[in-house]
Length: 369
Image (cartoon, rainbow, N blue to C red; front, side, top):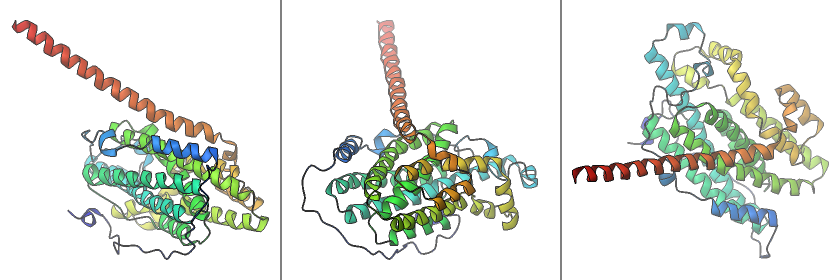
């Protein structure tokens, strides 16, 4: 079956071409490079994994309740439309919301793969090229995972959201080599980490929990890479150059805030656009979700040296200014540890099951004797 047949809305031309500009940069300096970045590169190599083997794809997923997250997370909850829906209708709504969320994850991961490849091409330092090459493979794996989950377990996809597509285009069209870092590593990846984390920590379904925990372990390294590279580079820029980057961040943050409403889902259920927008803006869950989504971005932006007055005012307007003092290193460490803990629990359970199976076989043999 063609993927196109699984889209609930027409995705348009199957090939999206973004005009690219900028130079491909080679480096003939093969010295050891920066120790911190090379250590991250080594970690990137050590942490490569196979999605086919590490994830238990045999786990069942109920398409009518794929994530087990609270119904309050859906903006139709508590409205006149919700009261008229049958349980079957509500199950279909949960399926659509999951398809929409994970479709945006999928499209974002493809964008991250392209951006990582662009960084390999355009960044001037060889140590950064080395690490970006490992990230390109990570992002390919993530796109593979989300595609498989949507096609095999949900059976439905949504086209890329307009706001996400705009941010991807703005990131890729810019000829300056640092912009794929800023657009992808800081903004899109930072938002994705927070979105992944919120679902990972609320779902009671083992397969999506595995997927999100393992993907987040990789993404924590990617954000660390972006912080490291940009912090070093932005120390060298003029005030005017820094303001240009801050304008890009401001526009990107507003785009991402507007991306989160899921109005495409409500349109499929016949909700008039004006009412759909009102429902989403009244949703307490959405307000909390929006704030949490910036929990990785704001401290990262501050850390790399983009903290001008206009950017600060934008974060006050968005209601996320206070997140600038969050401990980003602690959040990233927790993301990595949770994946390792999940692995340990899974392997311990599998080992216990194998031990019990062997003991049962021995007991049966003794009984027959």
